[in-house]
Length: 305
Image (cartoon, rainbow, N blue to C red; front, side):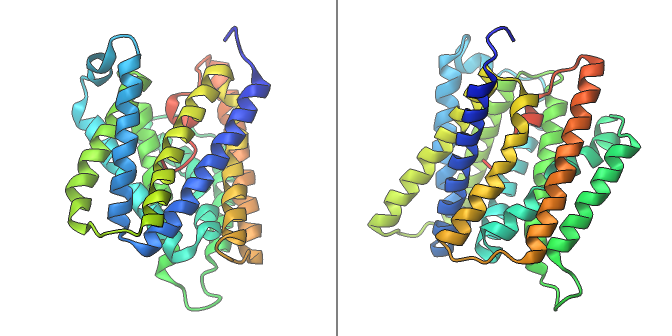
């Protein structure tokens, strides 16, 4: 990449994580007042419009962006991500931003663990050890056995698993489809699916919440635009570690806006998960350099849309 600007890329990634954390805070508030399906549906309407607008500006336009020889796979990806967003937003309502994000940060470890059986990629013992450490961190966060275990604690873990599967399917799709094609079908399929499911849960909102919903939609589009720009100006390996700042920003919003508490077990567990994730990322980058394979688009995702 001849025009690499790592400093700008890092700043853009930090801005991206902050915007997505704001989006999560808005989702937590709105889904606490209205049906989750309706909130996600409206988000997807704006997201689909953004995806179509991006596709229309590229060479070949929408027709080229939509061209795919693996439509069932693209539809499955879109459905999986839409479901994952619903589950994660529900986790925000049930557990709050801090605990939900602390558990969700385990998704890169799930990607690493599943990349062997699903994609046939080699996972060495060092990465398996990091994965094990990361899941010890998840257990510390969930804290089973200390009190009566709440099933709701598994909701963000289910979201992380769904997002990991989505990432692996995106890697698989990238073998034959471009990033632009996968991005297009992600938005369009999700919007159609959420409209079919969410329209039945429509309920009127207050004027103030309509305004917040508008801000939510704008932050979604802005976050994705920042992310796209980030990877246009910098290498993924240089900026990806800063994606973990979304946990920091979301936790700050949880503490300040929603008066959540940061429990010791959550802080310790999250530190283990993030450390294991950083090590796994470093090992993947070393393997990629040895094989001269650049990181795929699925390696560059940072959480829910």
